[in-house]
Length: 293
Image 1 (cartoon, rainbow, N blue to C red):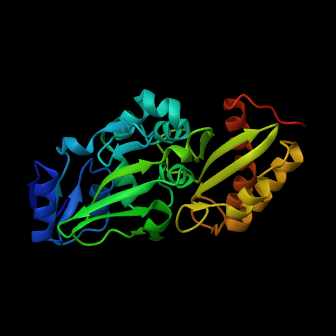
Image 2 (cartoon, rainbow, N blue to C red):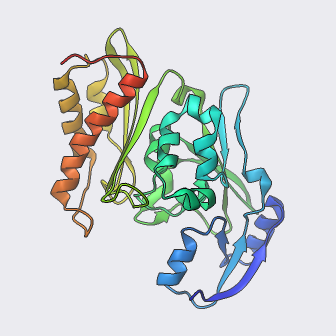
């Protein structure tokens, strides 16, 4: 049962910000696919909800004149999967959207909710890490922008201050132009399951070598993370089987995998090495490149 002590619905972002400032204890609800589950399993006495699901200004996907991609916080995963702008510019984010739950969940779940839930298993998070996404937040006190890598503070904890609403997610042109990417999710079931491990990669190729590689992992630590040592090693390397294996091995140095009921620490570390190589090869194939075996 849901113990809901009150329910209000904002018609505009300005109204939502005001209502949240008046009662900071209110919980925001959009698609409801995360918060309602939390309320059911961890009941809070008379939880008051503030719905922002009708804020059309937060449902846009656009590419600005300077190339910046802007995704409203209320964009659904179905929108992401079907958006030609994103299919062309950031296909790895489309991969992540398609892997998210089933059609019913994707129709309801929002990108902003997926990020603000703070889960290391969030399907969008590792790709947004790779894309150096910047989060735009708004409250009655003003606006601020924070890199997504600074937003995650710990398991289920994010830097969302009282009264704040995530409004937009921005991806700069230099963080996707010239890159090829891929998101690969491993789960115990083939569909509608939380990731045992998620790997997102982006790479640039120049003269038969890796010009730049980015690797993001989900469920390899308490928060999503980037494999900075592996990324630094890959730069300028030939695309050989040995290099792929070494990139994957060095990706392990950034992880903090643990044993849970879904998988052991050792199995997750095996997945990091195996899936990193697989994802890199698919990204490279998408870029029209070949690697040397």
